Length: 500
Image (cartoon, rainbow, N blue to C red):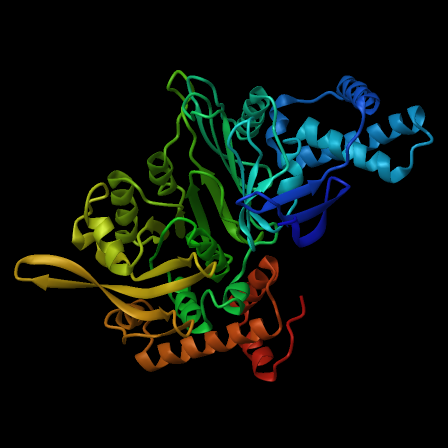
């Protein structure tokens, strides 16, 4: 068998144009992801080394400002302008495209993660993995899944250096004594690193690349991850501050779904989010305070846990509390106590169905009393079909308290369920509790609640029709709805586009 080209496309990173080829190579059992990175000789490498020294000598950098994403961008522009001036003086005959390419490579090495920066610029990738210096970097492609690249990070010390750069940017450190790292890049991508000998082959880096243009509710409805019936119910629940739990397996889309729901919050509500690493991205005009945990230093000091942040958030007068994921009993107790004291809470757990969500919450290690679960009004269960490569809302359920003799328990009543044979999400059962809770919170009759849901569904369908899928656009429409509901309803009725 000869090499077979499956796909070819181009991208740009730091001004460098790069060709990407997906190839089925002869004798290989996995597909290859080949980057056509500009090559240069020893003379050019020496020139770039001298240029790097000149730039460092010319620029005074305040170390603490390296934690600021905006400062990094400013520094890049400053370096780019200065490098071009030096190149114009030393290499006047070199064409501008080659100069920009060399400067781009230089910036990737000085202020980034070298060749990994080129991979981060590819919007088709979800995951970038360095297993050691001895083997090529692997990537997870949206279309072709796991691919072996032609990129190597050598030597092993360079992999550790990149891990340290990632750590320093978020005020953390990774050392032989502290060989595990969970962090995020300036771009918001989630990063994990481990050092040898904890990872037997060598030092590792795993980067989960998030969309630069975040998903919105319009995207999720268009790609059939959910539908407007479900989103109208969730919108109404969030508008009136009911509590929602997201469930699902790893990479099933829990955080992404939580993200697309955030514009349903009123702009005048104070939102506190608590995460291990920053993954949520809310519209700019929301009253939002993002908080992240911090690992202790090698002496065991300076650590800030999720429980610390959760307890502290209750003193910050929040209207809404978002917790990335509940894993431990004490965190869950404080979180559910917050629900019982009137705070609107959204969080996620690892569970594959609504029934499994309940079992996960009432059994070790979380082990909550079943009576505390009556504060959860809705449970959205996400599912990832690995064969088809799609994510879907598997179930929308409500938690219903019930008594068996003297013993209290909670059961799940599934309102909507995904039917894989037809690839549609259909109604499964009538509500037992949700409508009563809404009626209690709002004073609306059951008929009025149904009209509200129908109205919200119409608005969502209108947004999909006019392709209002940008995060800020969705947020602006929602904010306008809360300021002047009738104005939005008139636009929808006339099928008139929203002026942004």
